[in-house]
Image 1 (tube, rainbow, N blue to C red):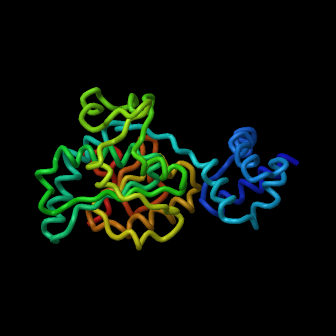
Image 2 (tube, helix red, strand yellow):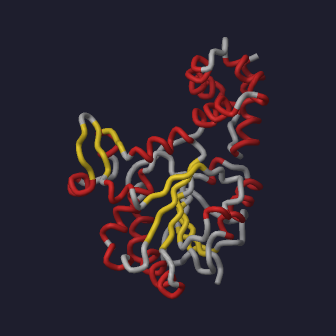
Image 3 (cartoon, helix red, strand yellow):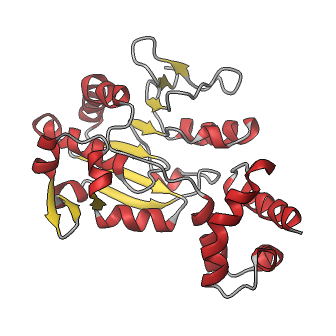
Length: 270
C-alpha cells in the first residue's frame, strides 16, 4: 500500500511542481511527510495520499513544501557571484541606463533566501554605480514555508557560517539571541513572491539577469524546455541566465548559448 501511496504523491508532485520523485526515494518521502500527516490529522500516509488529489489547498501546499529541496547557502559556488559582480552587473547597469529603468535580477527557486541576499550584498558594495538607476531583486520559490523564512531575514549560526566571511557577517548582520538578522537595507532590496516555474512568469516583468541554479536537475527534459522558454521570454537579447555547476543545456534547449568567458552563464542570443 505504501508504494501505491508514494506513486500517487509522486504524480501529484509531477503535475503541480514538475518535480520527478524516483521510486527509490520511498522512505525519504514517507519521512518528510510524517509531520504533514500529523499536522492535518491523517491516520497514516496512505490516508494522506488518498485524499491528496481533492485536498484543500493548505494540505497540498504542505506536501509541496515538505518535498521541495531547499538546500542553500551564502555565495554558493563563488564563481557565479564573481561573474555577476565583475561582468553581469556592469552590463545590466549599462543596459538599464540606456533604457532609463531599474536594474532587475530574478532569483528563481530562492529557497530560504541566501542566494538573493548574497546578490544584495554585492549590490550594496557597488551602490555608487547603480544608485541613479535603482536596482531590485525579485526572489521566487514554490515553497511558502521557505519564502516565509527568507522574508524574515533570520539565519542560524550554522547558516551564516556557510559562505560568509567574518567581515561580511559583522557588516551585514546583527546578532539577536541565537540567530542573526540581516540588515534592513538588504532586506528592502529583495522582493519575495511565490511562483511556480511551470507557470508563465510574465507578471514578474523583464530582467537583466536570472539566477536559476541547481533547479533544472529535478525536471524531465520536456519540463526543462518549458521552463527555459518561460525564462527566455523574461530576458532581453544578450541577457544572462545563470545555472548550477552541474547543469547543462546541451540537447535540451537552443534558446540560450553558453558564455565563453563566464562559467555557468548562458546568454539569450542577440
